[in-house]
View (cartoon, helix red, strand yellow):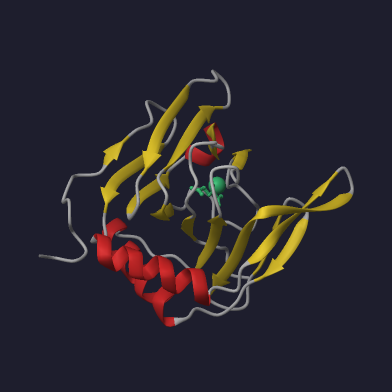
Length: 203
Ligand SMILES: O=C(O)CCC(=O)C(=O)O
Ligand SMILES: [Fe+2]
């Protein structure tokens, strides 16, 4: 069995207009995906995320880490972060995601949600450091969580359950026209790691 193609489904665009979001389903065989989860859980330099809210620095329960081809700085929610250099497991996952999506990426933002109470509010990934309309590839490991899109003008929503070992790729004008979020859920008690591979503008 090909460890990287357990399901072999054609990716499906789940957005009706104004952008493309391809859901590939499971792209990594379960035992390898679990091994990746454990390695990342232990080896990533997790830190609580910080944000400026009405001029006050707050910390989230959710943890984050940012890795990239050096040297990148990235500013979001009013706080500037410095990227760390890649390590082997991350490079392996990056290569897999690049081959699945036929794109290249030079940065990865990782999120660790300890349980369903930790989530991410409505936003779009359109910071000025990100290359406009470049693909953003999101790999999920661990607990299954609901991910939603909301159209900025007509407020239409689209939900997708992000399974363990699954891949979702946002492309084209998705960030311009749609918000997305990871919904909170009281039912989810297990942790989830999400990796979003991105393309930063070269400084
Ligand atoms: O955890 C997720 O699936 C979403 C993460 C996300 O939207 C982001 O990091 O910008
Ligand atoms: Fe996002």
